Length: 175
Image (tube, rainbow, N blue to C red; front, top):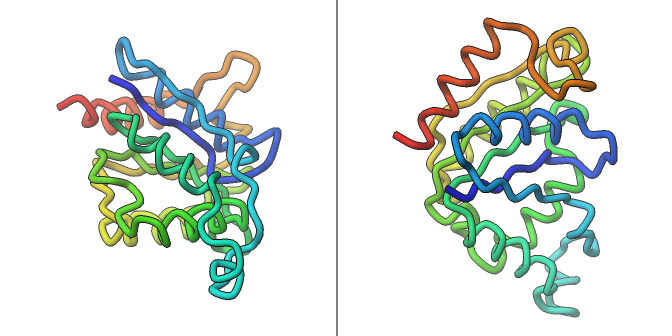
């Protein structure tokens, strides 16, 4: 199974990327393709910009990476209660090419933050909107207080309760 995993942020130190990759590696014998949103930096989307330049190749490349995957794991960073600009921009460009951005792929949606909220607001938005873009959400999880629950040096979730919950959700990708 080929899993596309990424943090929905452009941060080079993304805790969400760490969480997404960890979750993807819980799938036995998975081929994990780690996507970095920085590889898809494009002009800010607007209808005027679309008329002027058409659809950027990078947006097409983003959709191709999704197409090549059997499943998707995204972990969302939250900026002011919503998506990061980096994710929203890539998503907006991609959705103008194909409104079925997620291409009927099974998905796990995650979110984390350093604080106790665990980016739950953006996660709820993502889970609720995914079906409109042909995403088949198999499960979701917000991980609060990332630095208390995840050991970055060992690249693993150390909170056993959260780890069991994540493993149960991720197992739905293969069932």
